[in-house]
Amino acid sequence: MKRVLSGIQPSGKLTLGNYIGALKNFVTLQHDHVCNFMVVDLHAITVPQNPADLREQSESVAALFVAAGIDPAKANVYMQSHVRQHAQLGWMLTTLTSMGELERMTQFKDKSAGKESVGAGLFVYPALMAADILIYNADLVPVGEDQKQHLELTRDLAGRFNSRYGDYFKMPEPYIPKVGARIMSLDDASKKMSKSNPNPGSRIALLDSPDEIRKKISRATTDSGREVKFDPANKPEVSNLITIYSQCSGLSVAEVEARYDGQMYGPFKKDLAEVVVSQLEPLQQRYHDIRESGEIRSILRQGAEKASEMAEKTLTDVQQLMGFLPY
Ligand code: ATP
Ligand code: LTN
Image (cartoon, rainbow, N blue to C red):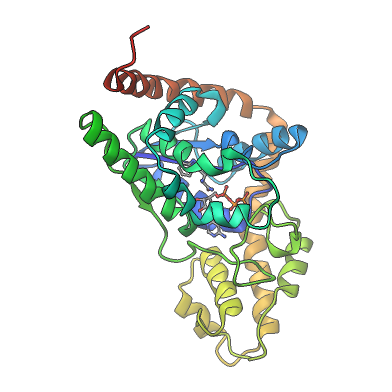
């Protein structure tokens, strides 16, 4: 069975973008792959986090993994920081990464833009992500479009390691959905929907109440036209809403267009809100049950124990290949 690894940062409340671009695919892949899904707290601290919020968000993201349908009996669910080998391999891969490669990363450019002081962790972030993936020799990495560049760097680092120290790492492939790999902000269709955007109106959080969802969708920007037509270049806002509709209803983009042929944005948005609400309601119910049961901590512990075994083996092999003296 092929191996799958992915992670989501506990840097805020998970959004519909995280769900459609990543989480939904985690759930699909768990049935016929060996899966590791992490809450990547070490990555989250590359920008300042309030400790109490980080703790709460970490548990919340883990519970959302399970609420979204990840079965801990099928896939390991755990905290990145609980498997200490990630940070160790991350350091080793940092030494193989060039400054120029890191400077070209668009996520770094976006997140550091306009900041007076930028942490070095934000800069070396992609080397830690490469370690997350390579430590399990993952074949597939389900992510949204924005992570493609990090995956390419991971492959370059794997190749560099292999040519210097001997063929060891497999080349991981990104697993990016054809539709929904880049859900855009509701207030600005030139930016991706993001959980750390300061404007909560820019996103739908998975735990938003039905009324919040209705309000956010009714206020979402559209254009001055009137056709519900999928045309990302000329109608980016409406196309984004059609994508969300399609992903939450199971209808194809063409079917959504056909359903609203000749109708205005008002009725389309009203129905879209109900489609999103009914997609999220069962997930929210399961989320609250899981949080109340208190079972998430033991799920995380068991996940970390299993993942550590695999990670420790890789780390030992890498140390040996790089010439570290055995313990
Ligand atoms: P932050 O705003 O803190 O950077 P984020 O919302 O961008 O967070 P990440 O934790 O960086 O989320 O991403 C988790 C996963 O969700 C990644 O695979 C990422 O590609 C995917 N993802 C994030 N935003 C979107 C989006 N708008 N559309 C589709 N996929 C997304
Ligand atoms: N950089 C990713 C989060 C992440 C990740 C990973 C994704 C950290 N390690 C390993 C896939 C595989 C992001 O979503 N911003």
